[in-house]
Image (cartoon, rainbow, N blue to C red; front, side):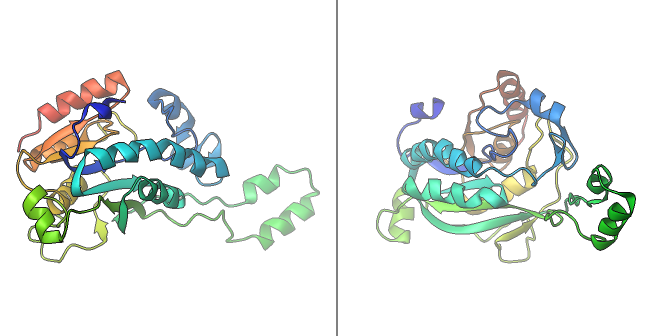
Length: 276
């Protein structure tokens, strides 16, 4: 794991979006394979959210725990880790960070407008081997009923913090970590930063199907990371490099890791081209 090469207590902020461990989006993530299976709202022929497996959460926890332990080692005392997670598995994400030694401070929500993905039952009923009058009665009885999926409008972010040295003030003066900056938020700049962050989904995917909006990442960096290029933002699942772009624009340093070589090369080029 590349993170083992990072010196202890040198990272100011972990900001990352790991695999969500649903429907093939796991530690064997393969962009080409997933694109071949995924249509809007559908994975592998079933609506997203209809394929449940209790092993998903357990596997996510097992995958994230050693990663979170590396974050704990690399972060400065009091440093924050912001980890995106899928709503129905976010508790496993939080437990992995907590068991690695982090304090779970809060849960943030990236708010956006998604597309409804719930399915009516008519199509499935008509395919069943039943008398026509029975099918029509079932369809009538289930009018307005859909699979249990409200329109997606958020992704959650676990806000965790490494233990501090002494008081908040002492920790900041020694390590420049552990306190947030509320003076200049990028999103809703006239308001005190809140736990719900409204940012439209990005159209700029840069070759990655799960890219996060750069403005969302910039907003988080401004609040949770010290100023200056000596403050390092770490993204262990860098993907197309959006976190690196946000860090560069905000004048911070950046370290990122991505196992897919083609994606990593594209991310390097994208981050290098970002202008502070």
